[in-house]
Length: 341
Image (cartoon, rainbow, N blue to C red; front, side, top):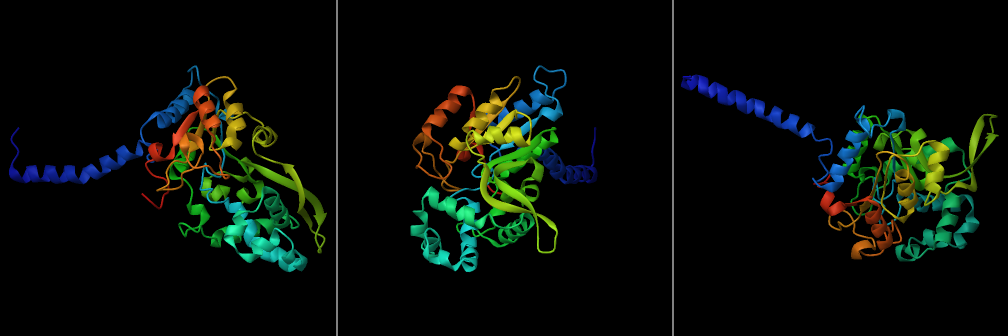
């Protein structure tokens, strides 16, 4: 067919104009663009395909498509210390103001000193005392407001950004992809249930009723105006870590998950519980092996040891033996944060 010069130019320009739209459409076909091509990404896509294919051997009704995610170290940064502990440290001056005698009592004295080296030496028992003093003794709604105000102003010392910016982009994409395929995505964290519920919907798209976390008792009583309130009591109701995670899942969600995602020894039992059922199931653990874009710690695979988010070699070996997918942050995530390449 003969094409004159003017027609040829028009065709070329039309094709050039249409190309970006084609490229954009192509990009949208990948629901997990921040995941590198490899076994981890393929395992996710295969699970979703299996459980959503009606008539297939792996089909799972939408009501039973439960996915559980640890938060710290799995959905957002947990180093060098959990963000909730930072909140607790920041609250110590207020607690000491209300109870001046605490200024001379450890571990409050050390926290008030501001000496980071000494604060880093605090024991788990010390941290428990600080948590009990800063997370109790107020009504639930007042606590929610305080956390909301704090998380809107607090900044991570390394990136100088809000903690809620330090969520992993690959996981945000994964949560969205699962929900688009009929999954109920849930957070199952060793952190405080009331703390995480303040921002879970806004940051992760996870509603408060799908957050399972460590929880203290609350007591129904009346305020000075005779209005009913729930007061946070200094007594632990559920320690949502290790075996406490499956227990919490049962108590709050009422169904065994078919997909579990964690990053440390505290998530072992959740992965075990999720994969013990019948049908298509998947457990994943993210290994922090990227010191440049985030942090590197283990001590699995010779990585530096860490008290925060410990991933032991024993857990790594068990995961490999049981077919749980170990996700390398360095290899499997082409992007870590939305704000950085």
